[in-house]
Image (cartoon, rainbow, N blue to C red; front, side, top):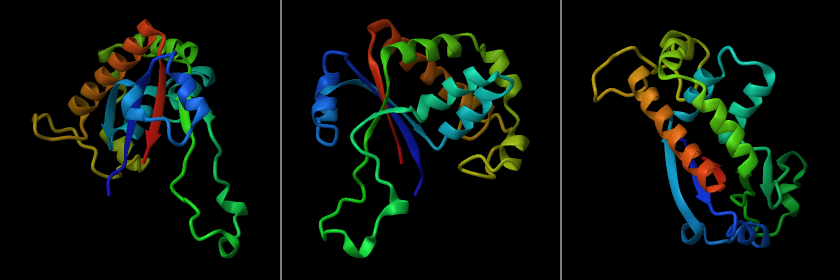
Length: 179
């Protein structure tokens, strides 16, 4: 099964629905748009973080792994499996999000990174050596029908910038689901 990260734009006026019901807020009824990064999100994060200082690296990490959330995180290390109710929901996860202020900061950082700089930071050998997900398939091929290369990640980078730009312009929240 392949992992993906999805970013959902949520209007600030609808965000209260998430706070009120963090596990059942009707995502597809309130989302203004979304972008799916299928198997590319860790590669994007790795390439974008190269050469950045600690503060900017933390912003890059928050793109797909925000620090803020609504709901409860399950602490699996403290669960006594044998004492859980039969209907315990292991899939129940909090809603992780970036607020409009953080979205704005992330967009400003993304916008400061040119396509040329991004391309210079892409090194398929380094991605493979570091075992960046999906692991050992990064390449330097240029064909349109080949993924996990610079052309593919540049396209994903442009999609990332676009959703952050739209969210910033509209003062939206961005929810992040990785799985």
